[in-house]
Length: 90
Image 1 (spheres, rainbow, N blue to C red):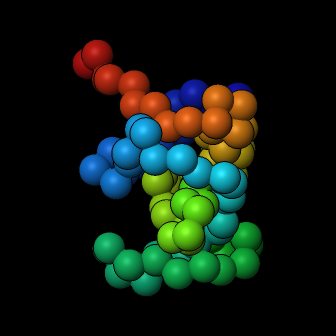
Image 2: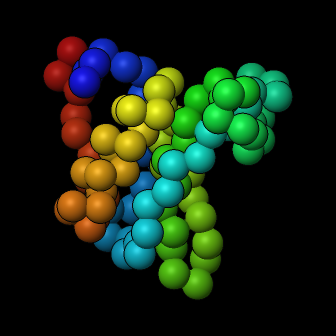
């Protein structure tokens, strides 16, 4: 796995104590700088990672530049069953 893949994590949208019951990965295409829409995998610019909030629906928590990276994040969330934020030490 290439750990140098680009991941944009939306920390302002993440509540570490918010329960979620599923994690999904969806391919998305860029429409404008800040607007994306679901698409076929062959047309994807990014792979969005969503959590499913009970009674609220899906919330995008991260965009990854590869499906492999998005699936790795999904697997980590599936294993831990909770959100987390890692501080960058740069």
